[in-house]
Image (tube, rainbow, N blue to C red; front, side):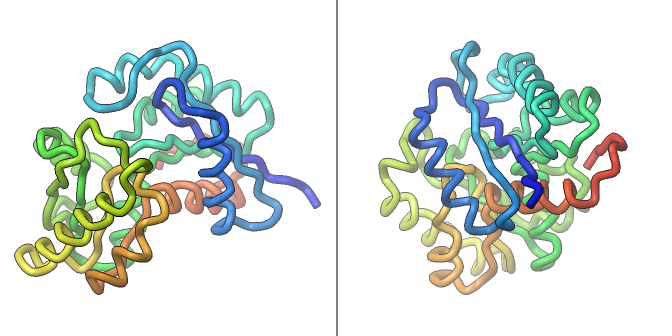
Length: 230
């Protein structure tokens, strides 16, 4: 059996190897047996992606990591972030698919419903994300609401129950006031909370991490060494 390797680039500095391996194990339940996931994080650029400035600062190292992944035989690259940092630059330089968490989740969300509701982790980033998300190829009117829970500076992994409680509360609000019929948690650290959120709110939930990895896998299986610009 030929193994298809997908490299996941986590654009936050200093992630623990054990945590990255745990995320790959979780995501592997959604991929085929012949797909091998690996994750790397920034080791030189000391930022976490919490602003457009962070994305710009991290861009050169992300591009180097993506080029190395292709050189090492990876069939696709996933940008593990809801800002899709350096996505266009990577696509320009690589000949394999490069998939970002935000764009992947919007594409899949548009297949699941007509009115998408995005829930971020920081209310201050709503205006910026509102502009960014409308550049990713989905008709702007499909994004019915962009809101946030008050989790800026908080660890989602360290506060799973509280994060889920806040997501459910906000999801119910968006369902009732904006009539959204699909929810997208706007941070890849929400990995694994989608099923509980969907059950509580009663609408489909697109997990950006799962969406990015499974879309990358699908694109890689169709790949014919031509540049991809999703």
